[in-house]
Amino acid sequence: MVRTRALLVALMICSVDAAPAAPVHPARLRPSFRMRLRGGGEFSASTILADTIFTCFESTSLVSAVNPGCFVTFSPPQPGDCSTRTGHFLLQSITPTLPVSHRVRGISFRSNDGATVFPSAGVILSALDDQGHFLLPDASQLASLQAQQITSSADTSWVHVDLDAAGIVVPAGSDMAILVALQFPDGEQLTALGNGPGIAVDAALPDSDCDFFTIDGGVTWMAPSYDPLDPLATPLDWGFVLRLEPITRAASATWSSVKALYRSP
View 1 (cartoon, rainbow, N blue to C red):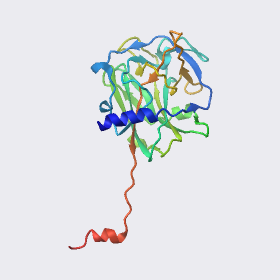
View 2 (view 1 turned 135 degrees about the vertical axis):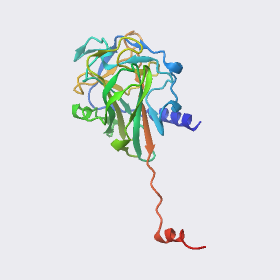
View 3 (view 1 turned 180 degrees about the vertical axis):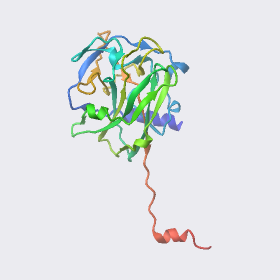
View 4 (view 1 turned 90 degrees about the vertical axis):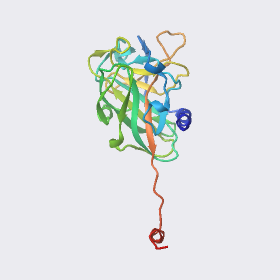
């Protein structure tokens, strides 16, 4: 019950209005693949190795699989055939309000294909300015993600990326965007359920403005467009889960009070 309550709070406080400072180009989804996930595909806090959970998707079901190559883009151009390259990254901004500083424990997502090895994944911190804007990462930041060679255990399975060793600390307050990033492998194609590189996403309204991708290693950033009149424009939120742990300080004590603990009765 405590975990469920924590999830609901996280969904509420992650709805902070933050936008990237640089232009983001809209892109239309060509194909997508419906996922019949084991156990109904339901998301719950108990399925994640969690301390404090934050997400930027609203639904409890992650029902479709996509990758950056699934989108029709125009500048730079790509046909949207779901083929991936190492310059392809999915990125999601999560902007919580934290009462105390938190340590990043890890990120989780649901992989479409058990044979997929993602080259890198990690977290980038980007400060919010006075207008609530943050900077999207450049190529050097994407090249320095903390975890490498992330494997999937099975088709449509949860993948947990441990970031404890990275020592990433998010300060208290609401002035920081936590950018979750995942790099895709080269020369592979998402063709069906359980076949090809992709991650599960939320395809339901409301559509949050927290999802971005790049096909050129961070030179150009794009976001999936949503138009209810356009069949190629779908409300999509990446299914990333961010795990944080509050940092608590030990209470200070005087030397006299410490000595008192060892006095004879």
